[in-house]
Length: 519
Image (cartoon, rainbow, N blue to C red; front, side):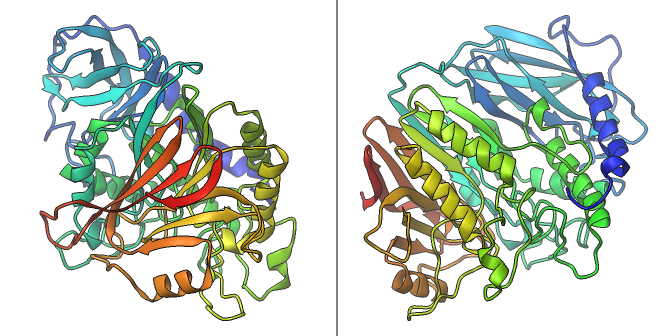
C-alpha cells in the first residue's frame, strides 16, 4: 500500500485477528455428542470440507458452517449465532476406528463461521481422513496427506494444477475427474471465483446477480462456488495449495489500483479487504495468511522432501500498475510484478534450495507471448510480458545463483501452453533458464477448441513455445529424480455434463537439461 495513511484499515484487520484468537484450538472430550443439540435450518456442512498446505507434521483442515449458503446477508444462514464450537477428528482409516487426533475449534461470526484447524501432531508422508461435527450434524469425510520430512529422499511426487473456474461458463467436470487421479496434492493458481454478474446459459447464474463489492457479496459468491459437488469432491480428495489472481477481487487490478476509472485507492482497498477476508474464510490457509485489512500474506514455500520445493507466489497484491505497451514506462527498471520484498524472498529461497526441482506456482504467463508473427512485438501487459525488467531480474538472478531445474506452473490464460524460458527471448540460442507449463481453465471460456487465433499467432511468433491448445481441463505432473513430466488432461466440453477426460499431450523436463521436450 502506498500514498496514504494505513491506519484507516487497522480496524478492518482487527476483527479477523480477534476471531482467530476466539477460534483457537482447544482440547476436546472426544467425539461424543454435546449435551444440547444445535439446530440449523439446513445441513451446516453444505460447503463441504477441505485440507491444505501439507507439512511433515500436519495440514490445515477447513470447513464453514453455512446451512443456507446463499443467504442474502452473507451469513450462510448463521445470522444471530455467536461462537459455535465445532468438533474435528483425524484418523488413519475412513471408518475412524484408528483416530489419531481430535479437538474443538470455535467458528466465529467475524470469520463467517469458518473453521481452520492446524493439526501439527501427525506423522510425515502419511494418508489421513478427517471430519467435523456440530450438534448432531456430521460433515462429509475428507482425505489428506502430510508431506515427507524435509530431508526425506522421496522417489516420486504426483500433483495437479488448476485455475479459472468461472461458475456460469461451464460445469466442473474436470474437477470430478481430478478427484479420481492418484495425487498427493492439487495446486490452484487463481481465479477461484469470478467477481462479475454473469448469468451464462446453463442455469448457473452468479449470486448475487451483480458484481460483488462487499464482504457479504464475496461471502455469497464463494459459497455459491463451494456448493458445486464436483469442486467439493476435488477438495475432499487431496490437500490443496492455493494462491489467487485478479478475479478473486476485480479483473486486472494491480495492488491498490482498480481497473475502473475514478476509483480512489483508499476506496478500492476497502473492497480488497472484503475480498481477501472472504478468500481466507473459504480456503484451507494457515494463520500466517489471516488478512489485516487489505493486506494478506499468501506467498510461501512448501517442501516435499529433497525432491521438490514449491514457491507459491502472489503476482497481484504488490505489482506495479499496468501501462500501455508503447509507453516508455514499460521498461522502467523499478517496475515490479512481485514487489521488492517478495522478489528478494523468491531469489534468496531459490539460491538456498537443495531440492531437485524448484517449482514456481504463480498466476500469469511468464514466457514472451508475442502475437505479431512479423518483426514487431505485440505483447499482453497484464502478465509478465508487461513487466519485462522484473522478469529479466528474475531470470538473471536464477542464472547468477546457479538454480537448477526451475519449472514454472501458470494459470490465467484459459489455454494450455508449454515453453522454454530464455534468458534473452530476442535470441533463440540464448540460455534456457527453466520451463513453463501453462494450464488451461476448468470452465472459463466455455467449451474451447483445439486451436484459436491466439494459438496460431503464439506458435508462429515465439520459437520457445512448443505446444498450444484451448480445451478445458487440468495438468497432471509426475516428478521423480530424473524428470518432471506434465500431462495435459482435457475434456471435450463443459457446457453440458458428463464429458470424458483424456490425455491430450505430455511433455518432459529432464534433470539437468532445462527446457521442454515432448514425452
